[in-house]
Amino acid sequence: MAAASDQEAIMAAEQGEAVVTPAAKRALLDRTALPWWSLVIPVLGIIAILLDLAKANGFGAALAGAVMIGCVVVAVHHAEVVAHKVGEPFGTLVLAVAVTVIEVSLIVSLMLSGSGDVATLARDTVFAAIMIILNFIVGICLLVGGIRHHEQRFVLRGVSAALSVLAAMAVLSLVLPNYTSTVAGPTLSQSQLTFVAIVSLILYATFVMVQTVRHRDYFLPAVDGSLPKDAHAEPPAAGTAWIAFGALLVALVGVVLLAKDLSPTIEAAVLGAGLPLAVVGILIAALVLAPESLAAVKAARKDRLQTSLNLAMGSALATIGLTIPSVAIVSLVMDWPLSLGIDAKSTVLFALSLLVSTLTLGNGRTTVLAGIVHLTIFAAYMFVTIVP
Image 1 (cartoon, rainbow, N blue to C red):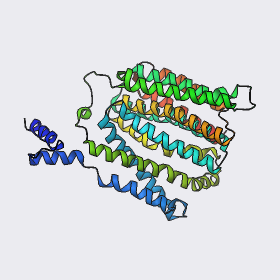
Image 2: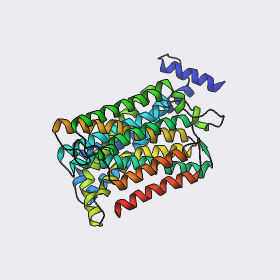
Image 3: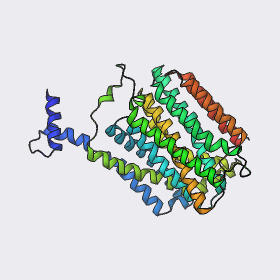
Image 4: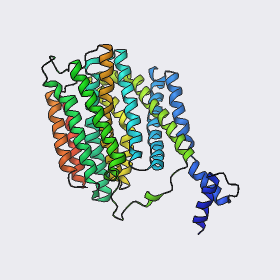
């Protein structure tokens, strides 16, 4: 009864009514309070960017790297706050779309600056992100969840829908350019590039509509009486959610811009270690995807595999559905060449990843074995990148 009374008092306080018990005030403060570090670290990230700490040698670059890692942790925290407020499956879209928008900005800015091979930059970044998401993030989630909970369940229809859209978009964007004949090489003509960009947008928009409106239940945790204890925890107040959303955007901007500024240092370290330059793109993609990775793993540890898969699959679809059209527009406007076709080695690994995903995620249940298989494929991808 006391808890119910406090809940009624909290609602009265949010509506501006005057009579509020001390216990309700404390409960309301608990709902509206965010940790101080979650608000300070994003500000430090912006300060580090303005001071160009990442471009400094020694201590400055190390400090910028530490701030960037802090921004990753903060982004995960605020994304979970916002996700808990809006509920599933809308919550998992927040981090996926936000990170992808920032990723697009990073790719476009690198293309405009002429850093690296502009023609293959988008292709390498998108393919690296897909392999990280489809094998590393999914693999580590299945492994961690399987170790902790033995067998985990998810709604098969939602994952199957996401895999079908992912296969269509990825093949049309990254494989088909190797076999067209209008333009020589792994590139598309202007009309073909426009078609692929439009199709990618249509497929992604349709998937989001299906996920959030028409078949939302496909992406919600199965109701079997075994939901986690905190599944029905009281969501944060609206003001708290908006503050968390703003801090999430600032933290993501800090992660990407610091990663961009640190890329010369990382590039020098990679070349100094005798590794191929392609490793730099993988490292930057991994940094950008770190918030989603941590959020997905935390969800899997809490036996919320559906949330983990929503994050992973949604991120992969957003990576293609938003990145390819964006870089296509830049390429067409700036009249830059754009090589989208992946090589034969990458095509084999991508086909293997899709085949294994349909098998390991094909019955609505997973164990540690599925996680090991996905991580093995990711290890093979990393190995043949380093030793081509």
